[in-house]
Length: 399
Ligand SMILES: C[S@@+](CC[C@H](N)C(=O)[O-])C[C@H]1O[C@@H](n2cnc3c(N)ncnc32)[C@H](O)[C@@H]1O
Image (cartoon, rainbow, N blue to C red; front, top):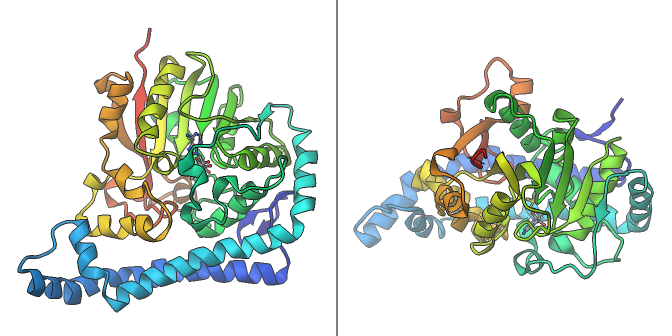
């Protein structure tokens, strides 16, 4: 039977640490939850009751967009307390994993290498790989060292940090295996793409394979491959997959230029990859998907909802990630016309649309009352949506 640690499913290379480490991890997760559940709801009344009248008095008009709302709120002590507490929780959660990771790194790397040897699907990583600077230059979402932290050529540190850290970051909302996005998109495909049974599946920006593995479970006959620009993450993904008794290949490749042959896949997916790329890379990812798809194949990107789907106050809340969580492309990505971008990449307009994939975990634990897509609440963080994941779906014309 699978054992769990604060709700996360244990496996042979999960970094948990000792009792004190776990206490720090629980505290960081609780502080994050407190910020979301208790402080966040206070922002709207503070805006309406205090910041808005003050702004109006100073400027003669009400704030109309998220930039002006931000201007009105940024000097308010309640907002500052919220933003500061959220940031502290974020830094704490990573450091609570980093400490046991650093103490145990040699044995974690050794175990990963041993496990990886039992996963017969390919693993590819190289110290010569050209990592895009929007990944290498930043400690994304305050993760120390980012996805490509420098360490030994064969190490898995960034992957190990991400696996445990993201469980705390998402406050367990991604499920015991951190795989809710993959599961939700698999369910979406089974329900909505009648008779579609992919045989070659590519997961772009797979990190440690959290969302990749559900595709192997759901489409067991298919060849499933995860790619990512981070060497420690693909190595960790390969080992973690073996720890879970599965065989899936993980390759260090760039989603904008993958080196696979034209028409290699009938399903290409990504989960929260796009908002961590750049304005230049994102169209190239779409073009690469179009090139790699077989006729009739699907591209599905699960990511953040565009700003036009919500009001300016919610935009302001969400855009705090850009300002305080080292997410430089977070807000800008939500303003892009992704449907047009898919058309520009080659997809026919009628075959491109946004949809909503209900969260698998919500359906599993509250099967009788899943939230309607219209009711979904967007909370402040990429791992804290409401009723479902936003999916951009495009089909390549059949031959
Ligand atoms: C938020 S993580 C994705 C999480 C993962 N898909 C999951 O569901 O658990 C974003 C990942 O995208 C990767 N990435 C960013 N740009 C990339 C690119 N051009 N090609 C491949 N991977 C990329 C990063 O290295 C990082 O691992």
